[in-house]
Length: 231
Image (tube, rainbow, N blue to C red; front, side):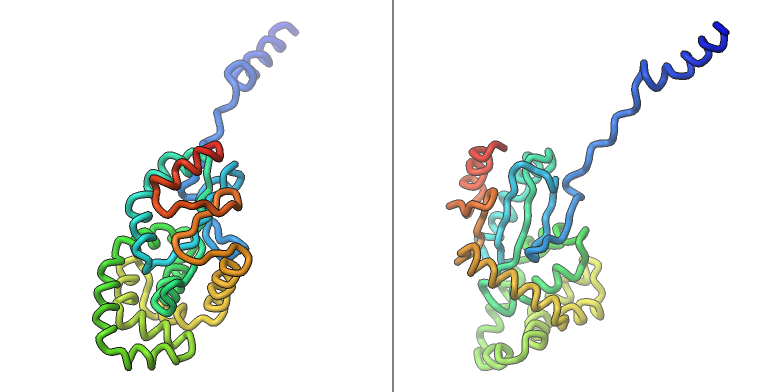
């Protein structure tokens, strides 16, 4: 009897004395979901601080934030689970923004943020092509009168967007399909309208910390807002 009891106790030692192996820590930087508001959120869904950016991929100030602020935001706050970061579209420059938004969303949820980063890094080249197009105002005016799918496709073709997204793994056929997707266009339009009507967004980037719009457009001004919220 004593031998059987001793054998049972030795069997249980790994479970009780040593304890179970700790659960692996979540990688919040790869935790990405599409939100009901039409955005994409990166990070801990239960983070105590929720940061929302309304951004435009052709906006130079947004480009500056992408270059200077996104890495420290992710490294110091999103990766630790303290802050979640959601990006929502606000098309301040119309058709070029619409085309880039449709193509960015076309790559899928898990690739959304890496491709968003790549688009911002390539922003100067897109701008060069847009400046060249502005030398033919009649052509631009004609494009802007087209239905949204054709309009977005014209800008995507002539600003090198389709070719650029190929380098990010998006086949041309799928890119063209997404540029003409009426449901995606309607979803982005609703995100834009809600931003303007519900949240009083009037420019980009606009940042919200736990639902409160903050007066910050660059990382040196945004980080203190996160710290004030408890990050």
